[in-house]
Image 1 (cartoon, helix red, strand yellow):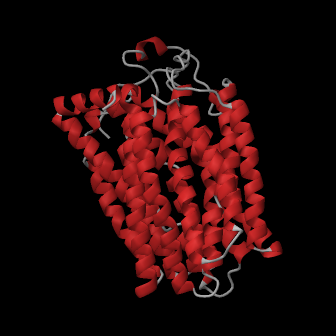
Image 2 (cartoon, rainbow, N blue to C red; image 1 turned 90 degrees about the vertical axis):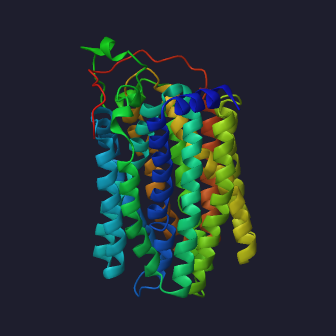
Length: 433
């Protein structure tokens, strides 16, 4: 057990209420993954069964939610920095996502799907920064690496369950059943969130301040959303690299699933479930590895692996269309995405430590990387319509190589970076949410 894990376990043992809240946080990450697991890849499969939907139409529909999320991501991060009511935001966003999941099965017209994507896109911007803030406010920066890896492991486990339910229900009952399941699980998300004791969340620490530092912040200038990024070249480089990574990665799984589903949409749901399950099963040990060794091994060497495997995965997808081969390649997605999800938050936390604007910076950085994720389905869809699935995958692989170059040249090691000079406005004591 590492020093960080030992400190974390000692604090949990010393405070049973903290242990219960952290257990609820694990449950929140697990159930939230069930809610969100089908709203991208399985939505693409579902729309293939609806007359009038082409690959490019599906790409555009999946892009809408991402684009609207870009608009609100940074203000959401600023709100999470400021408000003590983080739990309430998560509950509202989860219920909105559940309603959206039900709605798309009622009338899958372009207008209804687009409206649902708008709602779920906005809701989806709340979860990463709010959950990251609650975790940081509960355990502090000393135990945050371990907690981030643990949350990621529970999230991936939830994705496995969600994918199995979506795939099995889509094959045996109807493709719509998975979306009904997602809507119902939002109740469990709300219940887990309510079990987190808001009195244990230090809202100063949750926004990147060190304990006792809030008193020094009075009268200091409050930066704009992207001002936090503009003062840090490493953060800008990270944003550029991750935007390109998301542009390359975002459409690979939906595109591959649609290719396998062309001949039989019912079998397509099983193939899509298998693609997700294989990746998520690999992501679980990746997250555990980060929890145990994220500080000892350094951030950059671990993060680099996520950038290395992405272009390899894209090229390998073009070599064969056999379902078993394609599904086996998803092991690389498990390695890449499993590392990426945890390391992105950790590196942003490293680069904003002491500023009091962790969530603001995370929101702004997520906005920039989200540009890539939002545009990826539309770009790949148009290329696939024009030149086929393999050409689209090769195009995405080229973008992944560019992301790798930017990351290697622009992003430094951040594990032991010193605190940034504070530039926050007044902070508040923890309050119930």
